[in-house]
Image 1 (cartoon, rainbow, N blue to C red):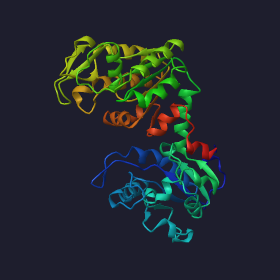
Image 2: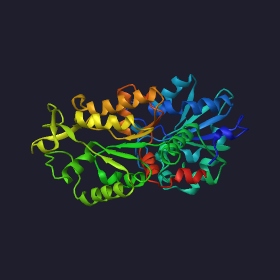
Image 3: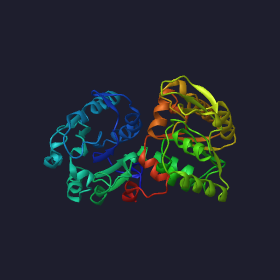
Image 4: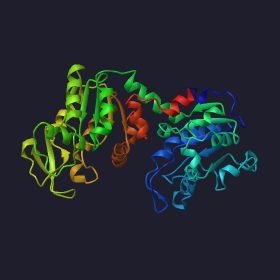
Length: 392
């Protein structure tokens, strides 16, 4: 895989730049600009090299149809403000555009094509569609690591028709994930949450032989608490997970990886209920587990203290309600404290975790924050991502 930084001559070249600008929109307003902010260094680098940039991206899942609410217009406006320059949004059917249509004068440096997922050929990885996109530029750059687990035309097929490179953010994502999966500084700890253990089982199985500690929190931990013979009341749980949990316990023993799960918890009668700290054997049938308790927080903080590398994916509880956010907040504070004294290398990923860290204004207090969801997790599973394979 070759980075665009290694290409010596991009002066006045047209760059087809695949970005992930799939930000949350509410009535046409962007509610979280993290993904936009992350790709600014790539845009600044390319404009400093006097390149002409054609941005390809998507928002939402229009399923191959034009959906006006999923236009890239608000993102285009946000980028214009951040880069202090005009960006032309081209709404014309991309299949009717040719290279001469894009830049009408020398002052134009960046244009943006409308939502690439308005075209069914994109998700079908159609080679003719990719070949047409390639006629618009001289060089292709993928700076959308978070889309690179998808074999789509603007991620995969496009690389067959143009000299292809990774972007600056893409390089950072792969470098950070390599550090925690290949170039490991031990002891290494993974804190993993989420509601379903089945969606993370392959990640856990892939990481157990490499990691010293796996800490399971969030809804996933409820299944373990139940597996150990406790009543979990109305808590979120996954049916038929006993065999999966047994497999995780056996593998962690074989590979000498310490498996940690809650010792005490915080319950409520519902998501807006009053928080109450309880032991695992004290949960009533009308209660739900919504956070980890103080003993568990203390136990996790001790493990973080002894770790040199931390991977965090998934909050410890229902952090959307401040009454049940304490576990997640305390974990974040402990990692930040270790980070500030350069005693740890920390990577956090996944939408909920990034949202939590945004709420705490702690995005810059980790060594690396991955904006990728599915791609981040599939990389950790050990899967080959189509976007990386195509660039290789």
